[in-house]
Structures are given as C-alpha cells and as structure tokens.
Amino acid sequence: MARSTQTPARKYGYQDVAELLREDVREAVFSAGSLLPTEKELQERFHVSRTTVRRALQALIDSGWAEASPNRGVIAKRGKLATKTTNVAYIDHTDTVNQVLFLQTNRHLQDLGLHLVHVDSRTHGVEGALRFAKEEGFAAAIVWPKKGYLNLDEVGDTFKQMPVICVQHEFPNITQADLVTEDHLMGGWLAASHLSRLGRKQIAITGMMDMLRTNHLRFSGYLLGQFHESVQPDAKNFSFCYTSNQAEPYMGHLERRLRDNDRPDALFVMDDFLMPYVVQTIEDAGLRVPEDIAIVAFGNDVPFTFGKRRLTTIDMDWSQVAGEVAERVRLRLEGDDRPPVTIRLGVNLVIRGSCGAPEEEWCVRPFSSHANSLAFARPNKQAAEFGERFESFFSNTSTVTNGGTRYE
Image (cartoon, rainbow, N blue to C red):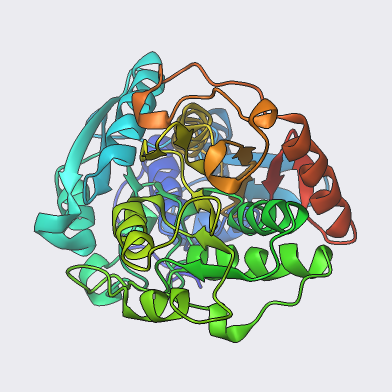
C-alpha cells in the first residue's frame, strides 16, 4: 500500500518531510521492516533537494522511526509513540480478580510515569470503552474481554492508534493486540491428572462453556490429563452449567448426574466463582466432599471451605500477570513493532482437603483475594512434576518455555 508519489506543491523543510514519512509509518503506508522510497523518489514526491531528503531521513533514523541498511536503503521502524496523556485505560466488567489485578498493574505503570484509569465495559461495552480511550487520548488500553468478537465498525482504527493489551481472553477477529494469559490447557491437565492419580475414575466437569478459547483450553486439558493417566473420559460426565448471557448457572445437568447409580467420584469446576452453586448441588444430592466426590476448581480467588477442608485449586500469580501486562505496555509505547505475542503464564496446583489428598500434602497457600498481593508460596513438588511432564508432552512444538511461561 502506498500513497501517491506526488505531494501537492509547497515549500517543505526537512522536518516537514520527516514528519510526513513518520505519519506514513504510523498509518502502515510503509509497514515496519519495509524499505522507504529511494532518495530520488522522495525528491520527486516532495519537490525538494537531495540534501533536504537526506536530512529528513537522518532525522527519521535519529528519532527511531527508521534505520539505515547498508546496500539496501532506509527501512521503516515503529518509533516511540507520542501520546496526549499518561493515562492507560483498564477496560473490564469489574470483579474481585480485576480489582486485585488493577491495583498491581497500576503499581508497575506508575513506575513508568503512567496512570491506570478504570473504564467500565459493562456500562459502555468493550467497543464503547475502547472508543472513549482513543478519543480521550489515552496512551494505551488494557482489556479483559467479556465477549468473543468485537464489532470492527465501532472500534475502527483504534488498534492502530494506540497499543491494546488483552488479559486472559483474546479477540479472534483482532490481530493487533498482545495477549497475557495463564496456561489454561496445563491447568486442566493438572486438575484431571491429580484427581486420576488419587484413584478417581469418574471425573465430571462443570463450569462455563461458550466461545471464549480459555474455556476450550481448560476442557482440552481436562481430557488430556485423564488420557495421560489412562483414564477414559466419558461424555455423560460433561455437565457444563453456564454461558456468558445467563443471569445465573443452570445446575440441572450436574444434579441429575450426581444422583445416578454410576455417579462421578470427582469433579473439575472450570470456574471457581461457580463454587456456591456447585456445593449446593452436591449437598442436594446427599453427597460429601471429598468422601463421595473430590473437587478441584480453576482459580484461587474464592475462599471456599468444607469444614476444615479447603478448596483445592489451580492458581496463578496475579502479580506476575500485572508485571507482564505493564511490560507489554512499556515496550509498545517505546516503539516495539514486532508482531503481537501471546504470553501464557504457568499455573500451580494448590492441594488442599477437597480433593481427598492426605493432610500431609495440603498446602497452606492463601486464596489470592485474601493474600498479600505480592506474597505467594512456592509451587509444591507434585505440581512441579506435572509441569515437567506437561512440557515434555509438548516438546516438539514451536513453543518456547521459560520458567513456566510459554511465549508464542
């Protein structure tokens, strides 16, 4: 894509030429990594001397928007973004996890001279919140999406004009945003493997199932964990209860399954916020935790207990998420023009009493929403072992691993 090689005649100085070329790179007329026009072509476009063109190109190089390539020419680069404000939008529906993540991310951004501002997507919609951030001159936006696809007619060129970092979920129809998320596949694997190794053979699953890829990955991990322990998953144990447009979950499928003669002896709850509904359903079926049914939930944010037994969970370090998100904002504002990346952060299995493990294996790790936001216990030995086996399983893929984090 290229603009007309001719620019309306006027008197251009070298700074004018440099700024027009900079604008071309911003708008991807010349994409990062591509060659800029030759000196002769630029002379003809701007009706200026060769000296003016050379000074303009040097100014572009000095400002980080281009680099000289011997024997090739001058290559376009994405320079440091000029922003109207130091505000960064945090776009979400607001819940306990997001409150914790907001505070921790804000600490990191303040060290960079930036300020996090909450923009409620429940009120404005994700598109409206993004549009607001762009119109108000926000430097960047951090989004926890609550919908699968964006209406591109509403967001327009927002993703070109400011960096957007997604947390947990991606937008399938947007390719310009970085994603920082947890390793949902590994989390499902850890949960199902752990329950299988405790001797549970009928492992049911419940939770949210909709178009968000995180749910699909957790479900896939649940299947993989059983296969790896030679336990055969059974479709009659798939008891999903919630999707994003429901006012409250429907527990009828799980309740009927728990009353069957061949009922499940374990349950993987893909979303810990559903635990109150799950436990009520178990109690209504006359079952005990963990004697009759063992439980592992994804998420370490709901402090649920069963007598002295606490909920076994798949947990991640929200402070690590906050640091990665802030780092992506910093890099993009400083002109990082590499293709968007997906960062999958490692998860931990936190063993407590609900899974039926012996008490000596229980972890004293607190629930995230009740813990010191920067203090997290080390992963236990069993979780580390699962992690090694999991990474070995995927060792032939192009994924790079580093300390439990996968960069794609």
